[in-house]
Amino acid sequence: MKTLVFEGAGWAGADISKATDVTNCRIRTRLRNNSGRVIYLEMGCCHFENPKFTPEYAKGLNYATHIDHLFYCDSNWDNNRNFSRELQPLTNIHFEYNKDNILKFVNDNLNCSFNNMMVYNNGEVQVHKSEEPLCDSSDGNYIPYKDIEVNISELDGVRPIHAKDWYAVYKISYNSLLKLSYMKKYFENQSKWGQIPKEDCKAYFRWDKNGIITDLELHAGVCMGVSAEDIKTIIDLIKKDNA
Image 1: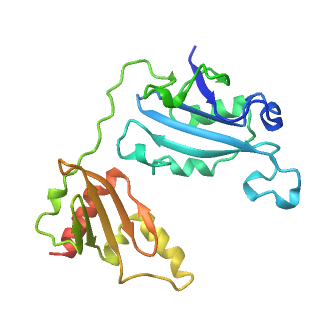
Image 2: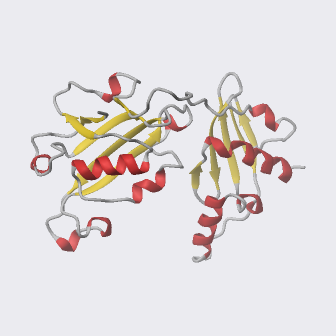
């Protein structure tokens, strides 16, 4: 039997906590999935008495689940974010807050195979006291995740707009950003309002003492964090823009 374990992170004595079989209105865990990836998940529920003030996501639900944090915490890159880019779309999923639905959500969407679920409300289990998973869905036969590491030296020869210590800003063109699906989607939405910042697009890099890039943001009318998987692609685009 594989048990999905959560720490009760809200007040177990609250009416909203007592109203469901989850026993706590906010829960959180760090789990290992079937392929060995370690994931942090935090969720809660809301109850709206007045239909007039019920948001769209909660309509038709008595106690509506909302996902507040969901990221791969075995990745140094994602561990600094509230959401991993790959997992962020799952925050658009809302369902009735109960053990069966939470278990199904985790198994169906996070590549897990837990059989049941437990919530601990009295401090016996505390997510932030250790970096180890509270529960493990794997069979133990997995290859640990290895961080994607790209060195800022990849941009040697390209002059930044601004640089200081372990930080630099580079110009990247609007046309280059269009090659990134999420930026293209953003620009398409902005174009409906006649707002396309074609002339002021930049990439902000930060790196550690060894030159390994630790953070990358794109600024183009919006500040958008980038996943580690896209670092090399963006560097190549910057190089082409500055060739």
